[in-house]
Image (cartoon, rainbow, N blue to C red; front, top):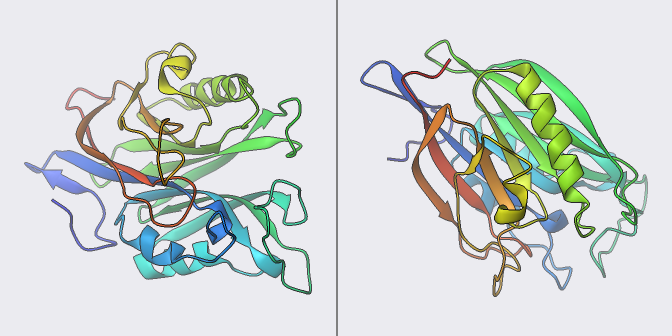
Length: 256
C-alpha cells in the first residue's frame, strides 16, 4: 500500500483518506557505542506523511540530519531544540565537534500543508537533566478538507515523570479539537499511559526498547476515536537504542 515518498495521504473511494505516521528516537544519530549510523536512510525508508524525530541533533547549531531527511522526502521541517549538546543527557562517548555549541530536541516533518504550530510547555520532571520539555503540535490540512493535529513528544525518562507531561499535552491537544494523535518517545508503558490519555488508544503495539533486545514499548502513536488503524509495525533495529515505529491510520467516515 506504500506510495513513493512525498505523495501524501491516499483518498479511498474519493472520500476517506489514510495518513502514514512514523516516530523514531534517533539517539543523536549514533549507536550506543557513539558511532554514527545511517539515520537519514533509516528515516527515509519509513516513507511517512508525518515523521516525528526525538533526540534530533544539530551539531554546531547548523542544519542537522533532520534537514537532510526533509529534503530527501520533500517535507517541511519544524524543529524545537530542548537542550544544548553540552547537556549531560547526550550519549556517552559522543565526540562534539569544535566550534559553536549545538543543540538537540524534537523535529516534526510533514509533506502536508501546515495550518498552525503550537509549542506546548510540558514542565520539568524532578531529576531530569532537561529543564523543561515541550510538545510540538502541528495542525495539518488533509486533501479531503479535514484538519488533524499531530503532536510530537519526548517525555521525561524519570520514572513516572512522563505521565504529568503527557496529561498536559493531551489536554492541550483536546482544546484544539478535531482528529489528533500524540506521537513519540513517551518513556512509559502503554497500560500506565492509557488512564492518562483517556479516549485514545495505541495504533502500534510491540516492544521498541532497547533496540537490540527490546523488552518494553515506550515509543507510541496514540490516536483518538476519529481514526481507525489500517496497518502498524515496529521496525527492525537500525542503529539507535530505540526501534522506529509506524502506522497507517484512516479517518472514520463520521469523524468531525
